[in-house]
Length: 199
Image (tube, rainbow, N blue to C red; front, side, top):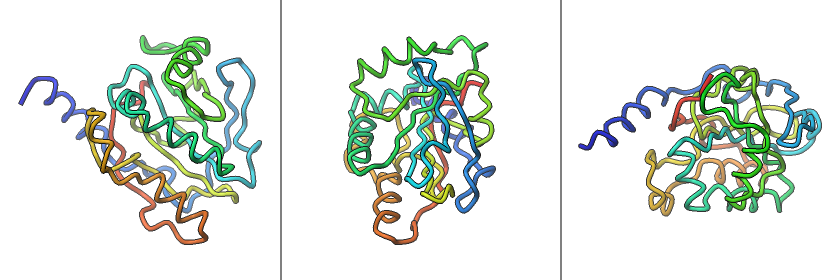
């Protein structure tokens, strides 16, 4: 086992616990966060729609996996076309070395060809803490009534290898397909994996 592999394994083990503060069935905490252009975006703005929250950090190799492979952008485009609101949230605290300004995040997302509704700069980490976000990426799906219906990992391939996206079971896609079909979400909670949110 290489040192890098061991370090990644430790990160997965350490930050892979289920986020318990906002379990499926709980009301999604309200928030208002500025987007990369400094405009306020509130969860309440999207009441009556399905909303996906994606915790992100460009410095994280697990996040890079899903952008290099175009997996995240594909999901963003797929669900935006079905009137699902996709919001990417960077909860890296402003005092942390990995903090990115709105301009820096906008530029990074632009170079990735992302297609979310907005990228939000949670500079105080308040929203990340309200959702008990543990990792980047971590995914939360909220239904039109404002209830969390999925919280956890993006998929079941807990690695940084972009090739592992192929053949992975994507929990977010499954949850949205079931919910939009009027079915209960069969897997509503999983252990998120990735880098720690930099609080």
